[in-house]
Image (cartoon, rainbow, N blue to C red; front, side, top):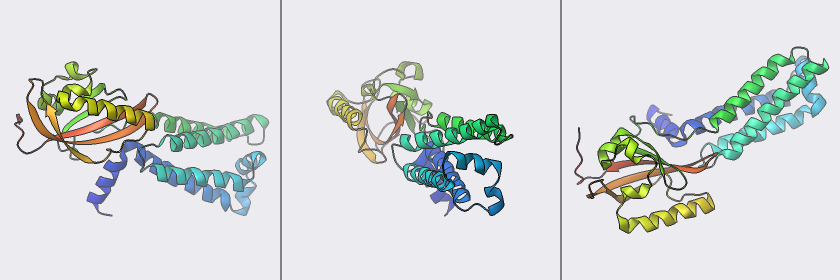
Length: 252
């Protein structure tokens, strides 16, 4: 895979997707170690503690299913099930190790418990990350706007301020409709309501030609790429906006 292709893939799946890829591959490796353990380690305290709860084959199946789920959902707009499954399995693994320490079956099980519980907490933390887009070569210095499920602006970069004429302090908390002509606002509100009801955005990943509205009331052509992602607060959106040819934009 070339560097350009890898960059496009990473930009497509984002930080959350990249984390799921790592967790998915790790889950598959753990599944293999449980499904085909060497004879000597099979009798080790760690394996014995796990086998006391469920056969190693069942553990292997659980890890394999979780890994496959992570690798599939890393490419999807909704990845909450994969994060929840991975977090639950990691925490369960840690609890088994911890309990085996107190029962005396695995005297040093607390070491593994600390690792697995910390790992589970890390995955739970990643699940709260927004799929934020930073201004780099991936966005080409475009305007980047993050909005919540109600269409209220949550984040606003300097390029957006330059393009639309609203400062960050003025824009954050206002509805996205301030960026579009009145004739487009009803359609926008209906689209947001549909995504809230279905949990799916049919526009995600597409380049959409639209008309933007500056603070001074002037209109100009834009190209919008939108991505919908899920957080504990519901669906949120990241929009990357570039002025199209013919738009009068101050380059400074």
